[in-house]
Length: 393
Image (cartoon, rainbow, N blue to C red; front, side, top):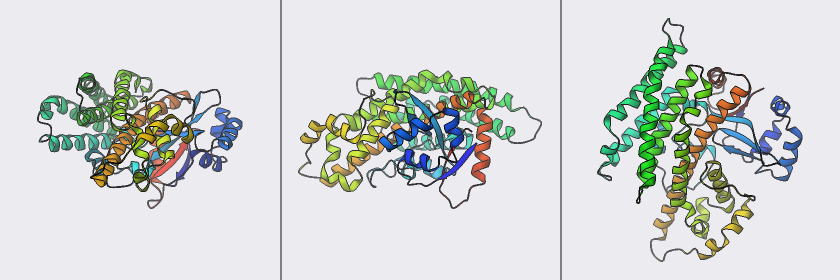
């Protein structure tokens, strides 16, 4: 495995990978892409290599894609998960898609740590806490999330944690028994939360809070299923078993993106939004991320100039309100943050599925890959950046 620490504020993935090409030479050799990548990196340094969740994907000249490397969050923190679920930053900070800012926007951590039981249990606990805090705002919320079904997923995650703990120990117990018991509980939970989300999206008056909560519960359940399968060395079924539910996550992201951004994108480029971090480049990148998450159809020109031309009329029509401008701009930032979080969380699930596929293509067990990442992260400097880039040699 190739492992390199990553600066938090890295700008331009293609230029970073090209600067580190000697270290990642085995990746280029294995994929046979060094010539194409060099040309693309020169022609389009910002768009030739893009991040989709935890994956770094090279867009080839023929329109295809190749996974080049992966990003790993080496020191995930549970308080960041709680901040993301509670939306504590909403409207209070300049918008950004940097890895550091995404730590408190996305509930799912970046990389395979998102599949570890500690992170899954922490995310589920934060969601339950969020439900309790919202019950006054949405009267029937507690009826929607049945206590028995919540307990079912909790039991599945607890069994998953026990099984993974035994995997890491030298005790006589068989982790497959515990993981085998956890799997049907997680699978049934994906069906339950998937039905809730599907019904909400099909309702005539869907509610954003409900959609986001249901999608986040579904993400945890899908990740729980994948973690069980990976623990039992059944990588082939890790995410394929949840293909319908992943499609639902994409649909939910598309709906949230339309409600928050796509229905009127011009207002985000008003001069008042400049100091809040909203630029044409940011909007173009956000739309590309939305396309990667299945929220938008593909397009031929994903550059900032292409985005501007596509939305020129909407930008021309945009106007600030006469009163309450500060509050109105804060609400726009909140909507952008909600869109970024929804897109990022779906892309992280998609990215994890692609990681498992790449591991299988390299004849490696994902469980072994996770152990190697754990060992590499443990050897990293504690005061260094909490992110690293790695690839299969």
